[in-house]
Length: 75
Image (cartoon, rainbow, N blue to C red):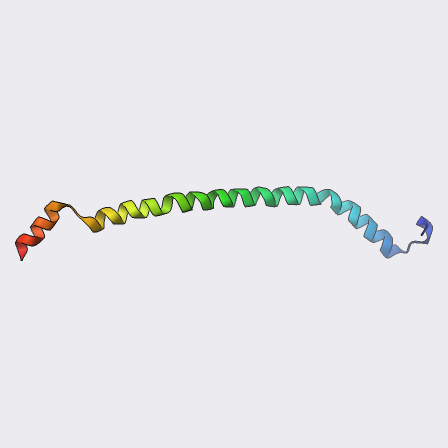
């Protein structure tokens, strides 16, 4: 088809494609960057949260030998 025989919808489609092709790369880079940030936070949480809870709960649950001796004396 020659340029003159295209209808207005085809011209509008081409105009929109040309306008938004430039934005596709920017959008993809933005999404990739955000995905990288969230995966980084996920790795931090996966590594450190269990250790923190283990330290807090592990120390409270095990108790020391002096705590056990006091409990044995109460019996």
